[in-house]
Image (cartoon, rainbow, N blue to C red; front, side, top):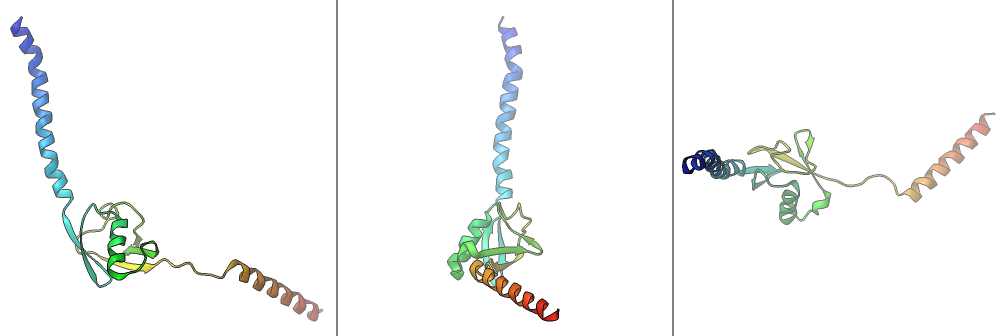
Length: 131
């Protein structure tokens, strides 16, 4: 009976040892992913981790340049960095990001409405003169 028990437990022990070995290998993989890299935003250099979020980069920029983080828009080449990590957005070591200000443009609604009324009135007058 003891021989039967060891033959049943042997595959379970081997699989447990293999799973433990895999767990010890994973931190090495995580360390490879979390390498530090240097990125340039306009003319400033920042040392960050590859898995750092875009929001944390914006906070770092805000601390250094005093531009509010909610107004910062980062662009890598032609791609706007929305959210997630830098590595997820395709940012590599020594890449240069462009910082743009995300400022709303256009007229106030009230002024736009008034201007549109004036233009309609002016067009109406011009049509009547042409008759």
